[in-house]
Length: 507
Ligand code: GLU
Image (cartoon, rainbow, N blue to C red):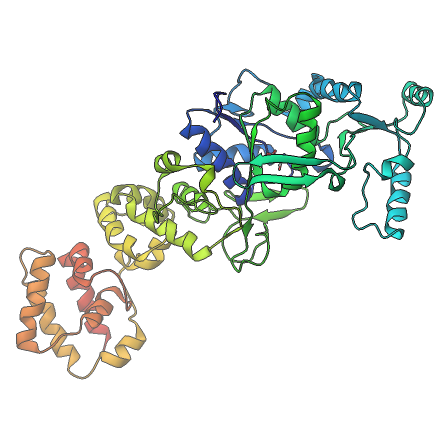
């Protein structure tokens, strides 16, 4: 690595909520920056006003906060030396025009005055001539109205009369463009495949191509890390840096692999039907009226979500899977990011949450679960709830499953699993379990050991007892945590009362 300070930027466009692919891009930027003691910057790329979506910027900021991958500089995260960090505001400062003018002056960019009708005609002409990918390039530009085909005088007149124009990059006809990508190695593209990209639009706004380069230079970005969808534009970017005389200052590039659908067939879409969220937080798109559910609101822990995302396309070089943020930072490198797409795995994603659930202390879980009980008007002692969490967490992936898995810890049963009763309750049962009830009544120190001993001692007198039946009599349901743990936690008074109620109800 060069001795340039490590500075990475996450540069989303506020065209919608930040989906999980975007979060992963932010995460990889963050992990690398932190690993090298560098900066992580949030830049908002809002030059395409037609695609601006209200609330998107706030969403992006809130999502990064929830994920715990907070920029130390940029929109919403304090003013660094390079403010403003919103491109629309930077445009107002004339930053981009300066770069476009420089390219014009050196003859590497030109004015194009073509109307949209003329561009349409060009496309039709090229299609009729069976050109595979019709584009404005070194060949087609010769038949268009631009400062390369018009006389100097004509150009001057058009500019003076304020005829709308765009500024385009003048891409050479047949030149090899080579660049290095940290993940993909050397990439070679012939310039014949690159179009004359618009750099400055007719409304004076820069396009992404020009704006991000100007900003990466001005903000002294050391590594430009972005999604694979930008790889085809990279050759044009290399040319822009070259023509600006900035190849040495150019950030190192890394294009991250796609996240694929669970079946590996195509890119994961924000409308994926795998049943898991595609967004970190609930996202409501006001312009389209669409609502998407978030990981947070679905009960995922942010650290589990981040851990899962980190392993979508990256690995630590061994088979470790559970890695908290500090460990991810310590181990992260772009060299270990795969070139090929990474399949999203919904089951594995839930598994991650389960692992993090088990890592949480019982007291923390109780803290998070108490409000659920309160919302149901259930009063419970904090210590009891803490013990409840210890037992129930083994059965769950999410805290929001706790209540359904263990409601009977808070509410005595009034009905009993019919299948178990039909199968196991017979004419002797009442007598047998009445005896067991008496023996439970006689326990002086109620705990797992005394319950276990009493239960097994009773078997010498009563014959084999059925644990599942005892579970059903005391909880109403057929499965749950360890039976004696459950009996112990519910307490002697509650358990004996519940058995009496059941005995009275069952024939
Ligand atoms: N604004 C671009 C996007 O949203 C950023 C790409 C980049 O990081 O350079 O995808």
